[in-house]
Image: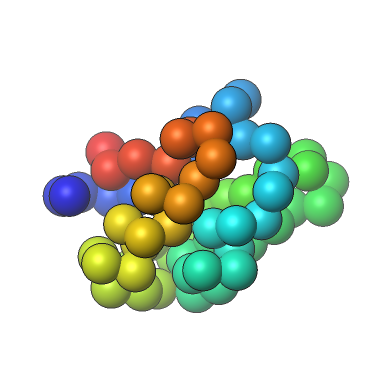
Length: 63
């Protein structure tokens, strides 16, 4: 756990789990149908890690 959180949008399935767990960090983009990082410091590292762990396709990581 270090650095900046990032989403591989090619792998994202748009389930919105990360958006529900960390709405201050992730938002769903209706145009692309994918989640995006909008504020990488919008939650604690532990909260972001919980979103990373909950992602069903493991497309969120620390960069």
